[in-house]
Image 1 (cartoon, rainbow, N blue to C red):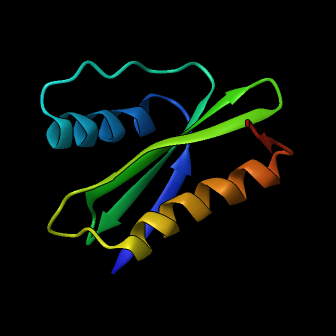
Image 2: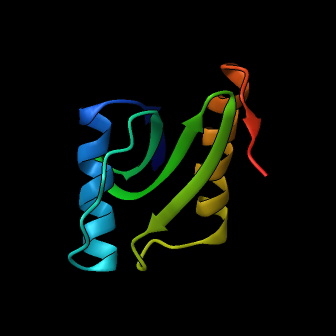
Length: 96
């Protein structure tokens, strides 16, 4: 069973950072001040993530990554859709 949590702060950044480092190799992941993180879980284990960066009233979604053994296009879209829902709920517009 898959579950996606969206939130801010260090508790969300920690699994996000761990997933990015594992998938991309040893990369320094910077915590962006105004960001929401989406963490994809399978049976309580973090298996994917995404980030929504906020600048004023605009947002950018990036770094959607899923471990290859769980990767599907549907899960990528699910992460993106959860971040989009959050953006709309707080009145943000997409940055072009």
